[in-house]
Structures are given as structure tokens and as C-alpha cells.
Length: 386
Image 1 (cartoon, rainbow, N blue to C red):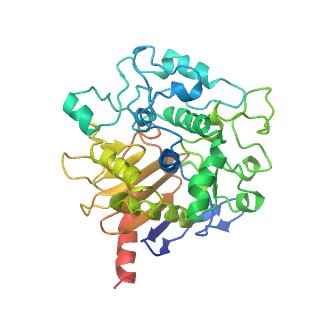
Image 2: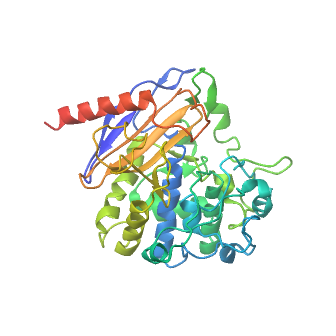
């Protein structure tokens, strides 16, 4: 599926295939799907909005919010900040397990040396001061483990449960219906879920038996699947902030529309001008040194087809236009949200039953199927706007 959008409109371009192969239900543009790592961008918008409220400082030691110390055992004197975590420069291991079920300890997870890289000195986002001062910014390594910690810090800073916080700061203001791990979406929305299949044809995620009223969050053995007693600021991993958003492409496009304000810093926009400029500055200075895929990255925003050194991300659109957003890959699905802020156009898409990249999830570039999908989408959009 591909949906195009600009500042004023959202239009489906390609809607094809089945949402559920067992029942034969056809895919519809408003069917919710697990969008994988685009969820991190949604979380980033919540973090930036919370910063606008003055409740969180992206460059403050996260230990101050949590009440326990977060430190790499290899660099025990170096603070860890939200900026570092959201830029994948906090020294966390990309190979570490990032699912921390309800009833288990987030603090214990980050006390485990296996969660950290020995050569991963935590480093913050680039600013004019750090560039002039020659501060070691820390090496980039994409790690899903940072997202649960970011989400938990947002809870601790606000006193709100993560799913409700994102509903208040992102989903409701933008007029979208979405949720994390189906919490709060309701039975009617779950009934329209897109089942994810692996390339082998087997069900990978969101089969009917896995949907509400069944338990949809990770729970430790012997722990009740009950959020009534959950204390915000203890373990937001249960909402899968790294990839657990369920949303339709029509609604995801509305989130994409909010990104246009990042370029212009509109005083009446989704973010204050200062915060919008911060996000754009961090992305502009977010070269990772990687030549494979995540070549430019900052605060959970990814930039593709950027001018400069060659990067294997330059073939999704192939038109040389820099676009910002985020990619997604998990459970046989690949997805994307990409905005050309200067041209005021954007696309969201997903495709399923895709073979995993050789190195595992979140390690590959854009696939041939994604490139073909976007080639079709660009041609259809050009035809419809003549």
C-alpha cells in the first residue's frame, strides 16, 4: 500500500492485496497495521512536544528522571541523555534483547553489561558548542533497546503512562486513531487489523488470536496481564515503543503532514519554532559514518538521499531529492514515512511477506520490492496531478 500526501490532502495511490489471507479480507486504506520502527519517529514527536511543555530536557542525565543511575559499565562517569538515546549514540548494543515484559525490571536490564558496547562511549547530539569544543560525540549503532528507556523517561518526567502520553501529545492533536500494542484501540479497530506474514507464508504478527481481547503486551511468567497497577516511569517497554504502533496509512500520512513544520518552524505548527529548528539541526548534523543505510540520523529522524558521501539509501526514490522520516522492518513487513519538506510532498507505505535482510531486522537497505512500489507511486502521482 502507498498513500501520498501534501499539506492539504491525503490520497491513496496503491491499495492491493489481502489484510487476512485466511478469511480473504481485502486490504483497505484505513486498515491498521504494525508500522515497525516508524514508531520511533512517533515517540520522538512526543518527546519534542514534552520538551515544548518544559517537562523534559533532551540533554539532561536520564537518571535524574528515573531515580536510578543509567550508566554504561564501560564508561561509568559519562551521563546518558535522551538526545544520545534518540540518536543511537548512547553506547547501547544493537544485539541486545529489547523486550522487557511487564513484571520484570528495566533497571536490571540496563545494569546488565550485555546491554552495552565496550567501545560505545555515550555521546550527545552535535551542537555548535560541541563542534567547536571537539567533544567526542560517540559512535552510532542502531539499537532498539534505547526506545524502551526513552519511553520510560518520558513517563517519569510527565507522570503519564506512555500510551496515554502519546495519545495526548501526538495522536489526538493530529486527529488520528492509533495505539501501541493495541492498548486503547478497541475491538472495532482490531477487527480491521492487517495480519503480517513472513515470506514463507506463515503468520508473523497480529493474527486474530493475538488481538484484543487477548493479552497484547509482553508479560512475565506468572504476571497478570493487567495495566491497572502499572506505575508510569517503571517499564514502558511493554508498549513496544521501538515498533509497536498500530495505525492506518491514511492516519500515518496525517503524522507525516506534521513534519512539514520542522522545516519552516511555523509558530502555529505542531512544534514551537525552537524545537522544530533543534530537530532539523540535529538531523542536518547527523552523519553517522555508515555507508550502508542509516547514513544520516538524529533524534529518531532519518534522512535519505542526502547530498554528500555515497550511501546505499539513495535508490528508494532515485530522484536525488533529500527526504526525512523513518523506515520500518519487522515480522515480514517493510514500511516507510518520507517527506520532502521543500517540495511539500510525502509518502507512507508498507509491504508484507518480505524476506528478512541477511543481517537480520533493521540491518538492510531498501528492498527491490520497496523501490518498485515507489516507482509505481511516483508515476501514479505524476499522472493524477497533470
